[in-house]
Structure formats: structure tokens, C-alpha cells
Image (cartoon, rainbow, N blue to C red):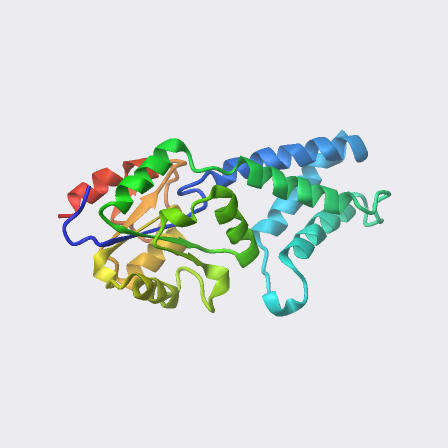
Length: 243
């Protein structure tokens, strides 16, 4: 499976190696069921949609004096109060219950499937592997722990632990240094055009590989990946072409 000139593969985590979106959907459904028993059916979808919106547009400052858990409990609290007319919930612990049900359900479901696990082990025999994931430190490190995947990689780099995340050039330079390789020795694989592919392109990697698992049509003006595949399991076919 070795590819001439390709010494290292940088891999994104969420929705590249694991189905974070799918796990999140199941977790939201669990919270929906909880909310139905406490607030009634008519409010649940709106509350959950508001939480997802806040999560999507979340900004987190580690120096801000609050943990990521506290920030996300507040997302649920605000969502509940916005839908219920701004009045405090009759259950003061409901926001916390929603958050930990969502968080723990998602972590319990996340897994590296056997085929992906086999692929990573095969790739590791001929390439250096580095896991490069954006996100807040605690959140991403918890995923790595529950997945038990640390040993599958030569290094794990979490964006929240650095001054800049993908697509910043600096974090890619850091990765190259950890592996002792040059940019042209590497392939970047991920599901985000804006972070993984733009970042890899700007860093000068040998090739960028976009995981388009949803059959998404890129927006006009988006970066063009060198290769597009529906699943990371198709990566060996790309590597075979890089000779």
C-alpha cells in the first residue's frame, strides 16, 4: 500500500474516521425524548434546533473562566428559556440533564468501525499517520480516549491546544515537524473543504483528499481537492495513483 514519495498521511477525525454527525443525531433524539416528558411534545424540536444552532456557531475561550461543559449547559439553558418565553424552567437542572445526556450518548456511540480500523493498521505499516482534528481540547481528547485510537497514530494534534487551528499554515507546519517530514511528503485527508482541504492546499501537501460522504455539491468558488472519495475506505485507491 506504500506510495512513492508519500511518507505521511494527515487524517481528520470527525466525519472522516468516525460518524460524529450520526452519533449527534442519535444523541439529540435522546434529549428530545427527555424534553417531551418534561416540557411537552410541541416544544422539543424548537429547543433542540436552537441548541444545534448555538453549537454550530460556538466560540470558546479557554481563558474565559468557564469550562466547555458549562458553556454547553448554558446553550441548553438559553434554548429552553427562549422557547418557553424567557421564564426560568420549572426544573432548574433540566439544562444540565439535557447536556450530559447529549454528551454521554454521543460518546457512547462514537466508534472506529472494524473496516476503518483495519485500514489504519494497514496504512501504518507503510506510512506515518497523524490525527489532526479541530475543536476544543477536552471535547476532542474525550473522543480520542473513548475511541482508544491514540496508538493508531504517530501523533495526535488537537487544534484547541494550539494558537491556530486548520486551515492555518502554522498547525500544519507543527504536524510536519512532529513527523519529521516535508509538506510534499504528505497527504491531507478530511471532510471539510474549508479547513482540511484549504489548509492542506495552502500548506503545500502533495495531495488533498476530500471525503464527500454526503454527496455534497461544492459551492461555486470553493477550493478544488486533488481527489474526492465517498469514504476513507477508498483512500488506498488514491494512494495507488500517487506514484
